[in-house]
Length: 254
Image (tube, rainbow, N blue to C red):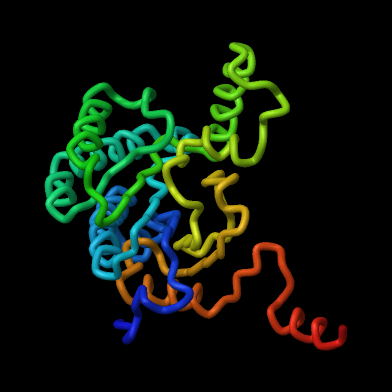
């Protein structure tokens, strides 16, 4: 399906989209194949969405690839997921670089295999100066972990006397999160039919518009992505303020 007329020139176009890529296993079950094949197709679909972000000149995309809780999955599945990650780093980084994509990873990368850590370091260094699309991959990531490590860093600065406790603010906390270099997400998308955050960007999503779809991740194509963005564009973001019409009525009454 193709949605006509989608453009980042429209008034309410998101700058930063964050996605929980869910439903690989359910897709595989429907197709009568293994969960491992579902994950493989899911990795392939990342390329589709990245290409569409580039076409739309959407500057920031953050993908939840592997949560800190995903280690609880069956050992064979976790091993396969790590192999898919390793293979994707081997195959895709040069293409991303050629298309002006900056690749960054957030999460506790130290828990990953040394070979994967090395490839992550190389990918981040190679693409450091690119700016066409800022692609952030959350890997061994949890929102609670992110907030905890931010507070530990702030506490360390307080103990060293660099700052005092009165200096702690929302802005300071944001500056110590793993996403400090990124704008807060405008649009959160979760595929696969579930409607929860699953410990993803808990601090950063405070005023993000949420979009849930029953479409499983391997089937979340360019048309489905466009529908999510069109849904975002139709909303009025108030960030805690009153509706625009309400303000006009109150002003007239005054």
